[in-house]
Length: 440
Ligand SMILES: *Cc1c(COP(=O)(O)O)cnc(C)c1O
Image (cartoon, rainbow, N blue to C red):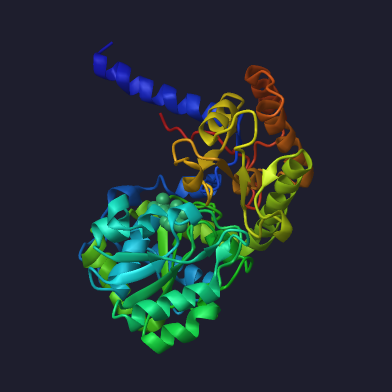
């Protein structure tokens, strides 16, 4: 057999191994989810090999008549789901959606407010010295929201004071950006609408993590609370293909369109637009029940860990109002997030290590932080409810607190997972959740 054929076969072997492993794990990565067999069927269609630069009906390429219809259905569903005046479904990811937002609302070098990474902000909001997208790619100056660590939210009064000080001192701000990657509580958007109008600032909202919850009318409604523009990833609490969306007020529509093409994209991954249309239809039908259960499960998982003596963030606020739970593991026998992440992975439990707001002060960094981040979107999609969250907390407890053999726990986790092999909250299908759709 040729060397190349061997490598070719190895790729498929590894894919099978990965899928098989995933079907045995408890995946609590807050930014991940499992898409339905319907979404996966859509994203392997011929659209994947085509181009359709521009807006549906005004393409720069021929051969797009069916692609255009699908994209228009996708746009229509997105506008309905978010009750938005305008939707652009072309950004190929959440970061690209953010770049479109920056391009549509600011000139290069303009100043913006965003959450710092330590407080749950995303690298695409960060300044140049961190290599962040806003600073390093667009040259934006970034000021951070004043954050109340106890309430785990933006401090409204202190932030308004800061904005006034900057504006009055000649350091003009153009965009107030809300949203983040550790996002347990709704951000105070409406509280900033007046000052935004006073100084002519735009309000942006990055819903990457919570776009599925918002689509279902949970968490918060940024476009009604005063946001001019909202970006999203479509694969976190929204169980779609890896893609992005920009939603905006009509007055920003032309600027957003130009940012997509000719600005940011030639090819916008048309197969994923098809997959996105499918997941938006699923969310219309099942999104409310799904989102409600995600949030219930997050609260239940937090409570179950807390009851076992774990230090879960924001206990006095009921831990979370979203899919995400943040846990301080610095006082556990494992002491840092990297070790907890590694040991849980060996026990078939997949989680993220995560910085805590006070880690820097304690001399810890993102490599060995004091926290872990958990999310319930994927396990909820497989039909798990509150009792299963208690079982998951117990598996974690056995590894992290009791120091039990990870090999034994891994076996027990795989056994536990056997019952949850079908995607729920989707139009019915017989295909198992983690089955690789293979045509060879
Ligand atoms: C995940 C995330 C993104 C990036 O999304 P991609 O789709 O991975 O590009 C942007 N913003 C926030 C707040 C995120 O959490």
